[in-house]
Length: 317
Image 1: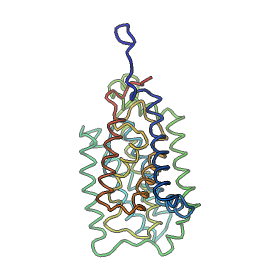
Image 2: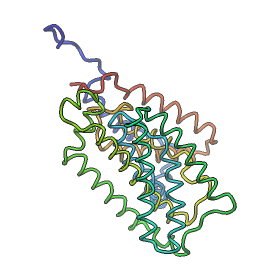
Image 3: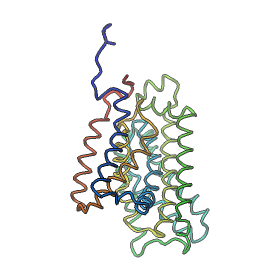
Image 4: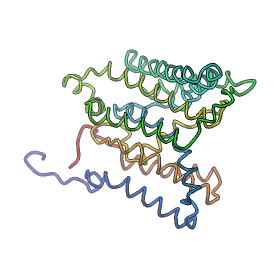
């Protein structure tokens, strides 16, 4: 309503359209590559391979999802995963439990650094995490200069489908429960819609943002464990471009880039699966990497144009 008159909502801004589009896009991608590959992409073996390549992305998306819900961005995730993987692999030679705990702790400390500069020093999350991305990438490169950092000889024995799937599902379920049933989701959405209004509503904005950045880092530490048991070692390219993959995946899942009230938890799962099917399909079709990047760039721009909200606090009906 505006001045007592009912204002027509543009078709693309209607809630039902925005909610359906990510699912429609997912179905379109599945059907398209099923036809183009003659069904080969969705054989049992390829589906198992596709799923095995999705665990790290799914877990990493959880932390960035919470940061983006607050209206922030985190481009340090890939480099953070690399550093945490170095810690996990190195310490696994002494004790695997200690390795996982220290990997999670390392991610949490890095997340706190991101949060400190964003919250206390009032530097935008984009700038802070970009700087940390380069800093952490340098640390990974330094740690792997002479040789890759190898994990304990049997670390890859954990790399089984039941273990990885159970590990990933537990993280997703815990995150969903916290986001949906503890009030955390509403607080994050309120911050994303407007920090000033959230403060007046009683949300402890600074503390919440610090905790979320720390939690996002800790979740990346868990993703680093899955990455470590998958490859058994860490090189200088560990986690390379992961932040880009996370961003594209979340947007493909219908995540508004600037967060706010329209965020849905299913954006994580739907987006990660859509991204992996899209990239796997392009590879199977024999499309060269530079053309793949061009296609992904076009898709990303289209989805950003569709799901970027000018007024994150408004729920379109």
